[in-house]
Image (cartoon, rainbow, N blue to C red):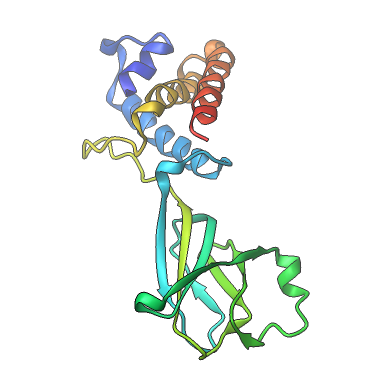
Amino acid sequence: MILAAFARIGKRRSEVLSEFLQDAYNESNLMLSDWSTRPGPNWWATDTVTTTLVEGTATYTLSAATIQIVQAYLTVGSGSSAYNRVLGPMSTTDYTSLSQPTQQGFPTSFWFDRQTTPQITLWPVPDGSSTYTLSIRRWRQLQDTDVAGGVQPEIPWRFLDVFVWGLAARLAWIYAPEKAAAIEQRAEKAWSQAATNDE
């Protein structure tokens, strides 16, 4: 895919030097970082994490790879009598406007505090009336490409062409600036088409 990206900016394989590959490696990881912050459609980079809640503890630390919470829900109780209840999101303003943020009860809402180390805060604060397990469906950071280790980018086949066009656009700004705007436009078209089909 890296050689294909160089070909799209007019660089033949025999012209691609080792430092070019290092630039491609760096640019591919920056591009995947950009993709992780775009709204949708990275559904292949979603997973579910669970945490057993503790009575009186409102805030729980999430993995730094957590980009956004798609959905949060509680499993109340255990065994055959357990049931799920979806939690509603609160904005920062909603949460800071609570008159009793430490009130305990059955959690109904969550506030996602997207910091370097993200956190989720529940309200009301979990009480001791039942066993609560929090499940979070999240968008997570895409894994880095590791050219030296032969690790492919963490993308599904339907985004391979998008990856090549996107990488070509980034490399064009370095190696073929006269072609950069046109290639960037083609890369955005590829992204738009794939993203639309992935919703």
